[in-house]
Image (cartoon, rainbow, N blue to C red; front, top):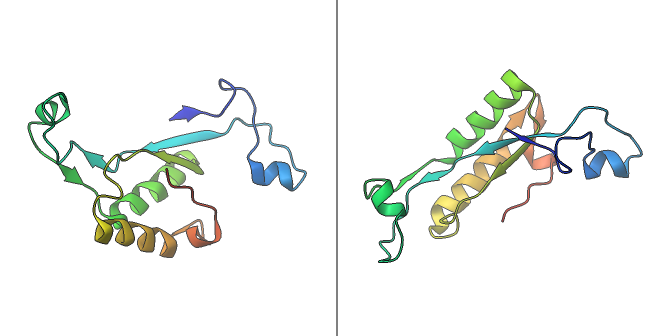
Length: 118
């Protein structure tokens, strides 16, 4: 889990700021791991060797499940994920996006929330 912008001090989301509301609690971000390893074997890179030449990916349902669990158990509402291979497989990318668009956290569809990729 990561503290919000500003080094862990109180912060507000842009939606809260735009609505004129202020939050006294720090924004907490959950870090999501969506892949392990890399499918490439670049001569200069140690990542494939570090991961024993394995490249493993998570499906959209698993990512949505992790987001729901982190929200249920820790109240995390903001998530961060970095995936160097996200756009390498169009079918996987669309499966993740479609799954997240249909998922709900606390009865609120993720499709109704702003999701930034990149």
